[in-house]
Amino acid sequence: MKTQTTAQTCPLQIVDFVSTSDDGWRRQDYYGKVLKKTSDLKSNACVAPTKPVPAFISQAVKKVHPEVSARYYGCGLVMPECLEGCSILDLGSGSGRDCYILSQLVGEKGHVTGIDMTEDQLEVARTYTDYHMQEFGYKKPNVCFIQGYIEALTEAGLENNSFDIIISNCVVNLSPDKRRVLTEAYRVLKDGGELYFSDIYSSGKLTEEIKKHKVLWGECLGGALWWKDLLQLAEEVGFSPPRLVTASIITVDNKELQDILGLFKFVSATYRLFKVPKGSTKPCQVMYNGNITGAEDSFHFDCQYTFKVDEVVEVDGEVASILTHSRFMEEFTFQPPGGPRGPCGVKAKTGIVDPFELVLQLEKQSPGSATGGCCSTRSPACCK
Image (cartoon, helix red, strand yellow):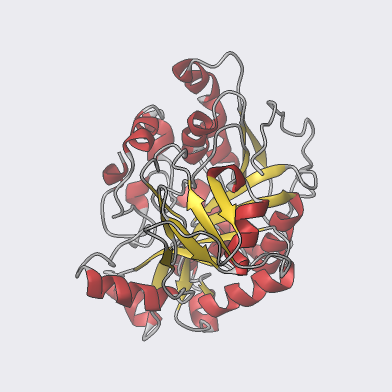
């Protein structure tokens, strides 16, 4: 169920963070010292989306200070739906671009917390807090930034069951302990909460040479998770099975890097993982009410389900559990399977969890549409 949150504050005292391996310092150096602006990237793995950006989000992007946008290195935009009044955590918030976009989408009664390991990035984000609050017309900040590692949310002072939504934008691949990232995310999410994140996945388990290559790691390729491992990790941590939203192939134009990567392929993909009861909900019929901002005519939930207004759709027990236990509950009308069906009642197509399979399917539907995705060769300006 969607909940309204009062403005919250970040932990008042943050401990000094010490990485348990060289990876933490390697990440800090790369994103704090090597990269100063987007044009410093040495591959096209972390640039911008080909998917059209809704007008209301485009307007929100335009209100972000140019310096914040220039120092941001995420993959395009990661903006889930139905955000009004929500409490959101951004893992690896960088210079704060997504946080300031989300600040506008949750409204003054919502709250956005950004956590990042890099002091240089956090300094940029914090410098422009007052600027953005004045730009948005807010009486007090609904955004705060804390320093810490995404594998160590406890140490950063983030409490259990405190966020409605967690987003992550091309950051999880940079962590050497992805299981702990998911475990910590699950812990701080409220019941019914969602982890909505875009990241890079590989077609197989990467070699040690690729994993240890500093540029490939910093460019989001060396730490890419095999997509099948995500499914297993999510289940072991307690999340519902990952729902694949979008996927697109990453092209690496740098010959030196491509030679090292060999036959491995990479894809940028967005998944949604929910903290909801498992196996307790039966299949049912649902009808979307059309009240989500930016999705007044239809709601693209994932690559399997796109809900059109006033159209009855049969959903399986897994999706039924998500819709009835999350912030989306108020956005649908529910009825048991076999109940009265509307004239446009439909059954959903078969679901896909393999991002490479989805890319092939999208390519057949619209040649050229499956290249680029959230991490492509296009200029960051296409987000604006």
